Structure formats: structure tokens, C-alpha cells
Length: 128
Image (cartoon, rainbow, N blue to C red; front, top):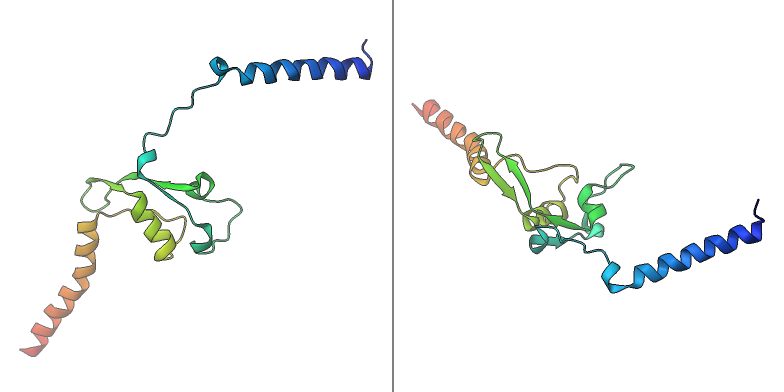
């Protein structure tokens, strides 16, 4: 059975060996960069809309926005919600932090124009 002093000495020796191995250049692990690093934007937490949650959204903990693929719910086309668009949505437009894009730009524009077209149709029918 070892004394506390002997256990501590053994632990310190193991730590010293690990430190020496970690500082060797050939032992350094190679960390692969994210495939989408080049299209990322930094998160500015102070500009985000406040949210009442115990945890942070993924992009906040990561510290940057990255491109996210999604499928449009109307036309079913594959789209990319870019990091720049996300930054605008969350920080400038003050969108809720747990929301994501679900419609492509063309479908959003069609959806916005639809109520306007309905009003025009009603006006034309009431004038007659």
C-alpha cells in the first residue's frame, strides 16, 4: 500500500510525461478545419434578441454562423441559408434565435405578394 506522498509523486510523474509527449511536434493532433469555415460570420451576442432558455443555440456556443442547407416547404427545392443571411436575420432583423429558414426567396416573395393580389381582385369585383 502506498502513502499519500508516494501516490502524489506517481501522479506528478505521469503528468510530467504527458506534458512532454504533448509538446513534441510529431505528437500534436491535426485538427481538420470545418468544410464551411470560409463562409462563416462571427456572432455578436449583444445584438441578438433576448431569449429565455437554459441553453444557448448552437451558433452562439460555436461563436459563428455557418451555411445551413434546407428544403423549401413550398417548392421542395434544396437551398442554402448563408451565414450572412443568418447574421442579418438574428442580429439586424431581431429574429427569434431558435428559428430557421423554411422557404426559398422566390416562395417568400410569392407569399408576400399573395395578399396584395387578393385585395386587388376584391377591389375589381366591388367596382363593377
